[in-house]
Image 1 (tube, rainbow, N blue to C red):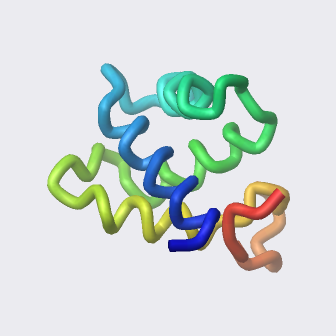
Image 2: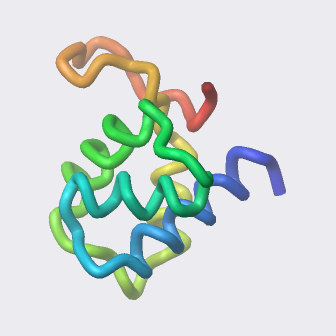
Amino acid sequence: MTTIHVLATALADAFLAGNGWRRADLVGQGGLVLGVRRRWLWPVADAVLAAYPRPPVDRPRELATFLSTLDPRRRRDDPSVRCRGLRG
């Protein structure tokens, strides 16, 4: 299991364990897992909410796989940049 997949799985589990499914909720849960709120959590939360308007509680591995494809360094308003993985 790669570091990216471990991170994506931990974030997916944290997101789904939280009490809310809003941007700030996901960033907060991600910050708890990481021990600090990283700046890249905000675009990751945005991408998750765009792909999953409701929490995929019955599909945690799918969410982890989705998270492992994201590149949080890309600009949200630049559609020409493809997500490339949780690297940063």
